[in-house]
Length: 553
Image (tube, one colour):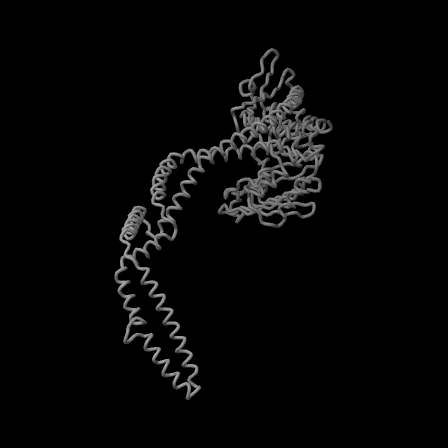
């Protein structure tokens, strides 16, 4: 629960430090005093939008902090632990707004982003504002109220996840379908190009081989002539060849070796040289013999090289890269073919996701129907207590199998009849302003009992009611305060008198300065305040007696 609120330089508040207690706390004050100032400060402290205009004129910044006792709030304890912000059974939230509108926030001394602050706030406080009755006319708000009461969070989460998966697959399908025409045009071009390169059939590395063989055949005559001359110089020359001259040198050194053994190593090297020359001569002779002009093969290579160069220019790549380019085009063509298969697979996945979404929606619908019946009885009973004896309230939950959303396939509408013999109609068409206030209040009080947040705030939700009905409202809020902390900003003495605690808001103006203050009231002060609410600014013995009786009741 909220145990303390400190407000500094916020709007027309200079400084406030308030301690709060369990039960129902009534908040009253004069018109224009700023009865909702503490509620606004707490909302800002828990992540609502902050503006530079909220800073008190002349101050550098507004500074707000709230202390919560979370010893009995396991949900908040888990959230703080998961976000590494826990501090035993206390939770201290602080927010500052600068003159420039810059905002900073802390939880238990740790700086946090605004989104995280809002998430924590949802675990701690639930605020029901005075405009909730009018917003209740909207179908989406009615659906949300029913879901709050039902508390089927896991069903909602499953439906939302199913919807997101279905939409994700559907977007992929739409993207593929939009690109299909472009893919078809690209596929036709690739089919032609790949078929052309398939027919040519150039293998990887083949162009280099062809180029080398073509060069050899083009120079075949010169190769034959030069290799023949080399053979003559090595071994075929009758008078002077390398082989005959080397043999003469070997003979001379052998003759010298008999006289000087030191020539053994040069002699061995000469013998090795002779062997190398003989082997090279044999290899060269074999090469010379293998040479053949082969004009037909040359023409074949000439044509293949020419075709390769033509295709390379056409595809704007080097001829040596043509085979790799061919493979790349074939791979792309295969991928485009896979896109059609992928589209078929995605369509099957979408159908499966849709079936799962419909299944989740059906379960959610069943749960809503069950809790709608329960809520119908409770709201109708509360309306009878709120001076609407002939009222009947009913929630229409219509399942539309062709409507899909993260919240399922239901369309919810609140129906009411207030007079005997009248048919149920949408509350926007049937309920008057006062009736709408009572209907809204009945629903809010009932749904608040099911909300897990430990602190509930009702900000002038009793607008449009008075007299005995207001007393019933006060009794309802007091009963609610038995199990949770309730704050009620009100102008009705019948409601305020039901509070376990009472706080009074006042405004003082001095010169150009205005300041709002908020203080707890003693029992005697409560009697005076209730008397003021009953009789206006002039407090008489009669109004004080009525206030005493009201408080005693």
